[in-house]
Image 1: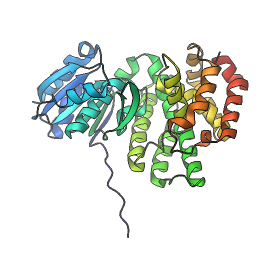
Image 2: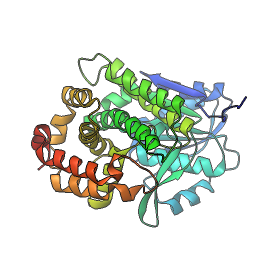
Image 3: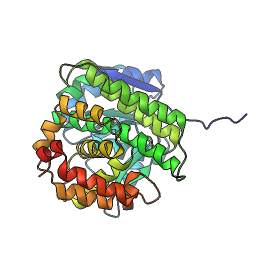
Image 4: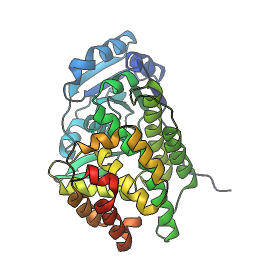
Length: 352
C-alpha cells in the first residue's frame, strides 16, 4: 500500500473578531517564546501596541520589530540573515508585501512563520509561495506554509472595501482554476490530485453559498477568509498552485506585465474568472451572480480598465506558464475569450 506524502497544515488557525488581542496566548501555547515582528507600512501606529501588549502579557520576548515596504529578493535575504539566532518565530502583520517578505525570510532561516493579514485581498496569506521581485521582475518563489494564521475579522472589516472585493475575486477564481486543471489532465499534460480538488471545491462552494446582507457581515468575512485559507492548503496538498490558479490567473499575471500600474490581483482575477467561466461554459451564472450581488462589478466599473489590455493579456497568457495547458494555451479558446471581452453585455459596462 502506498502512503501519501506528508503535508503541512497550520498549527494555529484563528479567524474571528478580536483575535489580534490574543496573539500572545496563541504563541505561548505553541512554545514560541521569542519572536521578531514585521509590520506593513504605517501599521505599527495602528496595531503595534495591541500586539506588543498581548505578547508581553504572555511573556513572549520581542527581539525586534520593524516596518517593511520591500519585496526585493536581495533585501529579503539581507533581512532574513539579520534575524537573531534566538528567534523562535517570525510574525508578519499587514498586506501582501509584508506577508511575502516575512514568509520568505522565515523560510530561509527555517523558523516558524506566523501570518497575520490585515486585509482579505487574496489567498497569499495561506500559500506556500511568496511573490517577490527578482532581477526587477515579480516572481513567485517557493516558501513554506505558515505555522500560524491569525485573522482578526474586525481589522478585515475596517480595511478599504476594495480589499474585500479583491478577496472575492481571488476566491471565486477557484471555479475556473479547478476546471482548467481537470482539462489539463484530459489533455495528458498534468495529473490532478483529487483530494486537492475536493478541498478547493469545498472552499469555493462554502463561500458562494454563504448568506449575507452586507460584505462586511461577520459570517461573510469569516467564510471568505476561511475559504482563502483552505485554498492555501489545497495548493500544499497538490504541491503546486494548480487547484487555485488557472487561466484566469494567467490573464492577471499578464496584465501585471502589460500595465504600468496594475489593479489589485483579486480584482483582475475576478474579471478574468468571469471571462473564463463563459469560455468554459461552466458555472458562469454562479460567478456572475456572486460578482454582481456583492458589488464587485460596480466597483470594477470605477477602475477604467480597458478591453484592449484584457485582449493583450489573453494573448500573452500562455507564455506566463508555458509548462501548463489551460484552455488559454489553445488558440481557439483565446479567440473565444477575446470575443467575450468585446461583446459581453456586462463587460461592456466595465471595460472601456
